[in-house]
Amino acid sequence: MNVLDKILDSKREKLNELKKYRSFADIRNEAEAVNRPVISFSESLKNSDTGIIAEFKRRSPSKGAINETASVENVVAGYAAAGAAAVSVLTDGEYFGGSTADLVNARKVSTVPLLRKDFIIDGYQICEAKIAGADFILLIAAAMDSVSQCKDLADFARLLGLEILLEIHGESELDFISAGVNAVGVNNRNLKTFVTDTAISVNLAAKIPENCIKVSESGISNPETVKQLKNIGYCGFLMGENFMKESDPAKAFACFVNKLK
Image (cartoon, rainbow, N blue to C red):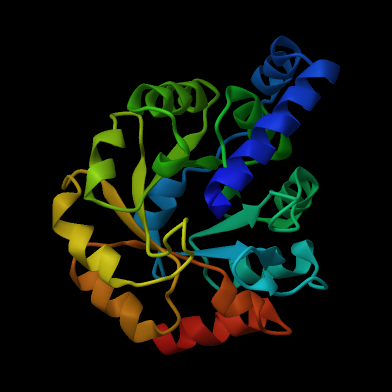
């Protein structure tokens, strides 16, 4: 069993437990009652000088501990102040050391759109995202049982006022792109082997529909790569480990932005 399959099995077990104590109907009612204005990440990307979705994560299955002492409030506020188009917050606990509490705390200080980055396979998690303060969610094609499941989740997220970043890994997943998706992210990291290669973004650039906002994810560590990807149509760049591995992630991000100018 590969890492992705293990993560998804864990998610299903956790969701089953959560639903025993709080029904979907109850959590949906709470999510629908949230009246906080959602900040559009698609508009933020279009208007951003950097296009960077800066990420907060403590660890990963491939790297282990990355930065387990950083304050989510300090990092997120620093990212926003330095020019992040949006901020991604890992909320998976078992494999990435995150929680929805991180998203709640990020919301307190963030002036830019927030992504709940997790392995979302159920509308329950989308309700959690809305309640915790997310503006958009990640849907991973490789985590879906079918194209129709992905579309249903995207439609439900939009019903709650959230936007959607759809993550794909290859040409075979282009069919997962639906009208409800706001942006398509190409993950340069293979979720089964966790090897990264930005050539994946290069190869898929021309195959993604022209009307889609293109985001390149993972494996980006220098400004020149960002500039090269911009030249072939990408306007968003999800980066986390490059900053989080430093003792002061927000400062590392600010330095990267200065080099990008």
